[in-house]
Image (cartoon, rainbow, N blue to C red; front, side, top):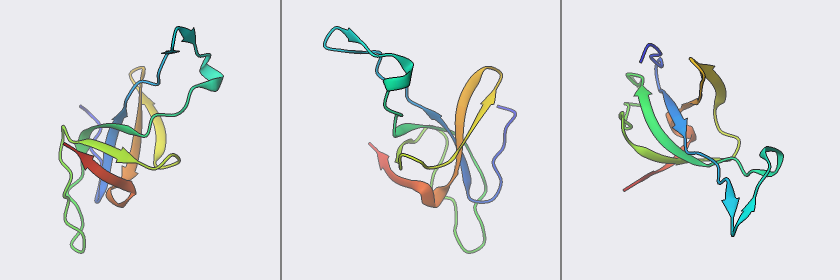
Length: 89
């Protein structure tokens, strides 16, 4: 991975949105944004807030958390560690 978050930021690969519900195909405009994903890179933290998250953590985050970015055709979210609500597992 060539993207390295700075300070207390993490790079998250969001989970895929559901394509079907009970046999009905959901169009892109009606899909709910996923609110969970996998941390693929993490910064070093700050002197006031050490980095708790690490690569591979499955996390839950708020609906509007982070900034979307696309790198090599893959969409990611970059957000502060404080925007993450929980670690799953």
